[in-house]
Image (cartoon, rainbow, N blue to C red):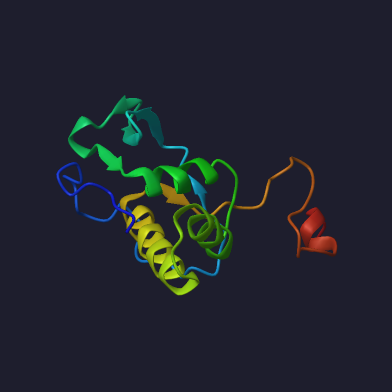
Length: 137
């Protein structure tokens, strides 16, 4: 089982603007947190207004730490579940279920986000074409 320590999960309210998220997306670590690994566990501190929110410290067990490390780059549920299955000798179904729950918990807490497309100044986002995208009237 993957866990965020209940003793450390002091703030159980969903992060502002977040809710349970469909898991058909890739996820990546939020840019609004800092993390440190201590004694095989990962501690996550949300940063709000350039200050660490010490009332909302999260602690991950070893499995959560594995997933957190992988989320340095965008990953989907299947990739994360495969890593958990390989590392911890669990069934594919159990790994999938545990990873989905953990991602939902992290998303609700604002610890992970869905990466957006890169924005390059002067270039229209993918899917926009024609004169409107270029600003012509």
